[in-house]
Image (cartoon, rainbow, N blue to C red; front, top):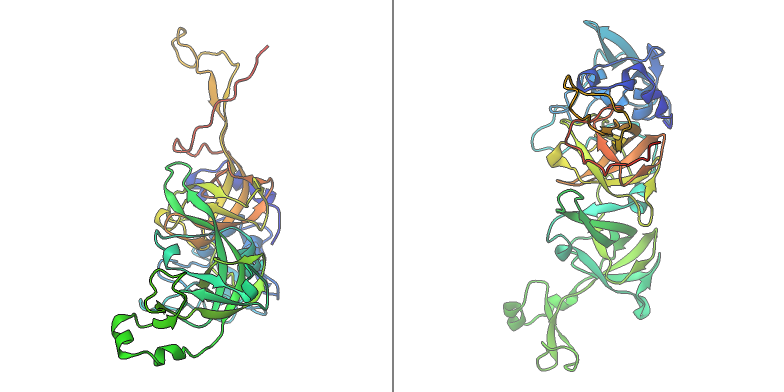
Length: 416
C-alpha cells in the first residue's frame, strides 16, 4: 500500500498529462490475470496492482457511482479475475457471473461502507482523533453540548472521571472536542467553519430525573419541559425569587477514552456510526478542482504520508468521500535571461518572465466532506506537503493547470 508515488509519476502515461490523456484506463503490464484477496489487503493496494492510476478503480469495475453507492463486497479468499470486454479491461470475481450490485432506495442512506476489506491500511479512529478536523454551520457551536463540571471542582479531567454536560438530550457515546480557530478560505477569506481538536470520548450514565416528576402545576405551566425549580442562594443568582430559581439537570458522563487533556467547557457531539471504518470507493473528482490547503497541524508547516490536510473545497465543488486528488508544488514565475525575439517583429521586446509547470508530489484521498471544506489523508508522497501546495485532479504532472491558479510572486535572479 505504501509504494512510492514515483512509480506513478515515472510511468509513461504520467510524464506529461493532459485532461484527454487522463481519461485513458491503462492496465499495468504485470497485472495479474487472477488474484486471490488476502487478509490485510486494501482496496487501494489491489487497484495499484492493476492500474497506473488506482483512483480509476470504478472504471475497472465498470461502476456508475451516480447510481450504485455500495458496489460488490470484496473479502479475503475471493479470486479476482481480469478479463476484456470489447477491448476494455474489466475486473470481476470468479464464480459470480459478473459484478453483483445493490440498488438503493432513495429513502436508504448509504455511506459506502460495503467493502469487506479496508480502502487503505490506517487506524481511522486514531487518525480522526489525533489529526485536525472541522465543524461547519454558523450556529453549530451554540447548539452543541458542553462540559460544565467535573469531580472535586477540577477543570482538567482524565479517563475514569465523571463529568457533567449541558445540552445532551440522548444517551450514548460522545466525542469530546475543543475549537482551535476559524477556517478561512485563503482566496476569498470566506469563513468555512471551525478547526477543532478531538480530545477524548465519554459515555452517558443513566439517571432518573426525579425532580421533574415532583414539579408543581405552577412550575409545569411556567417552565420548559426539562426545567424545574431548585433552592439557590439569592446572592449568586440574579433570577432567584424567594430562594428558588429555574434549573435543568446536567447529564452525567464517564470519560472512556482520552487522546489529549480534557477540560471544562469542551464540546461534545454524538459519536458517528462507522467511525472505526475507512471503507469507501477511491475515485477521481467529478469535475475540475483546484483546492488550497488551509490547515495541516498546529505548529507544523509540512506534512507526510498518512497525515491529514484540510482543504477549501467540498461537496459544492465536486469533492466527496473517496475523491483522490494530486498534490502539486505550485508553478513558479521567474525572470529569464533569454533574449531571443518572441515574434516576427524584431522591435518587440520578449517577455522576461517564464512560468514553470506544476510538479506532482503526492496523492491525497478525501475522507470527510462538508459543503465548502474537506479533510483528506496523504496516501503517497515523494516530498513533504506544505500549506503553499495546490491540489487538483491527479495525473497532471508538468501541467500549467490553465490560468486559474494563484500566480506567485516572481523570483528575480541576478544575471552575469
